[in-house]
Length: 97
Image (tube, rainbow, N blue to C red; front, side):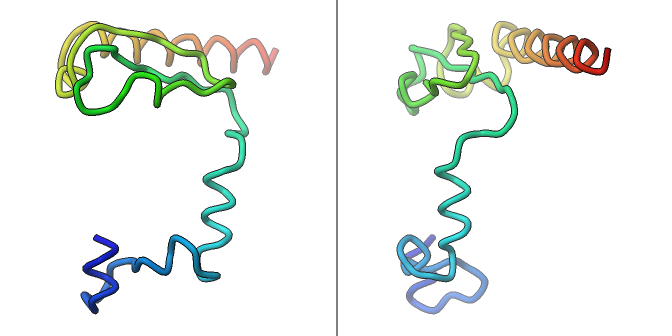
């Protein structure tokens, strides 16, 4: 996509966005720690994204079975998302006190 933008396709970002001043603030935000608690859901069976790419020292890591597309439709990943949302809701209620 960046190559197409660099070649002049309007509305797309360019290769300069990776290093240029136009997107410096955005790149800084991407490198900054996530300011809220979060969960990372991964699968060692995902043939597209390495499970280790989901590991973040500040994340609550949840491992589920399945391949890449199964993460969108199988019961285990969907249940894991629901459990994490429920967990987050409890944390929010406890903080509100």
